[in-house]
Image 1 (cartoon, helix red, strand yellow):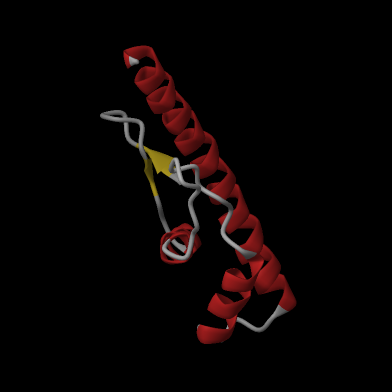
Image 2 (image 1 turned 135 degrees about the vertical axis):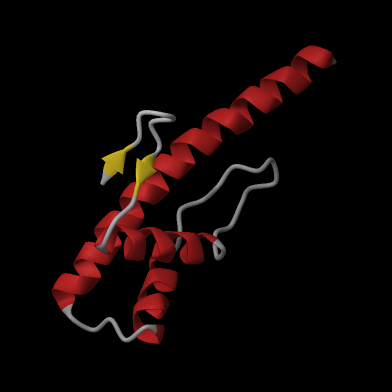
Length: 94
């Protein structure tokens, strides 16, 4: 993974693209609380993804699970803070 000096966003390469695309696809199966708090991508969805795309090797599945969980944890952390900030702003209005 490289970062560009212009905006410090990572530029994905090689297998990183595959894992990111898997995460994006799996994120569509994510559930949210009533206030918009994201829940983790269910393991059952990751397993179904592996079956759909014929990812059968244990090492491959473990690697996919690791990277998807890392990205999912980061997403939940960022989104949770956003939700909390939004709720705090709403409470202050009233």
